[in-house]
Image (cartoon, rainbow, N blue to C red; front, side, top):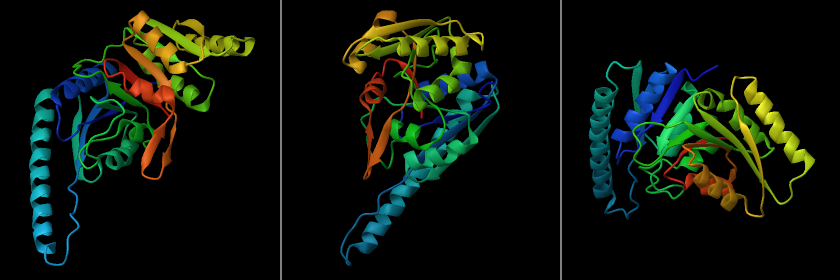
Length: 273
């Protein structure tokens, strides 16, 4: 069991060098193929009849600039990756979030950067991390801001006995196997036998894969605050969590813990839905 193909998403406006370096290093550690991907598009301006021709010309110019940027990113990607791993490049004129979800079918894992956390920029040029994890059908590893290597020494599993959390733990096994220390943390209003048993079962599951983990049951009313506090105190490099959310019209509405974790830009975040 392992990641054989890793897809790294690069937003067209960068910065991209740290993300490429981190993904290339991780692919080398996994002995995996690395696929570089970038998608962007230009909005077609809505104008009156008289301005239609000018709007079309402006749209074509913006697309030509995007094409030039695609080529520059491809060259940068191939220069950094070199011959360290098997690599491939893809790009496309489409919504970054939708494009990433489409091409994710070829990969075991998606790596990306999200320097602004859950906040999104231009939807035509920036991939939304929440949208990616909820639509792609693949786990998402969001690199810490500016990191050129994905540190995995101290990992924390944010546990909740749900389908999403169970999926995340299973998807993260190859990553957790790289860690020197693994903690499993659950936060609840009341610590009962059911919760302790579920924590013990997760630890047993990981032990079956050769991963030794400590369990922690934390009593608290605010899941997000208690979890973030634990991550800071333990100086975790990586957090593994299920991703919770749904679509509301054209926006993605995230669960409180999911949004809080995406906003932890100084930490590597592994999310699965």
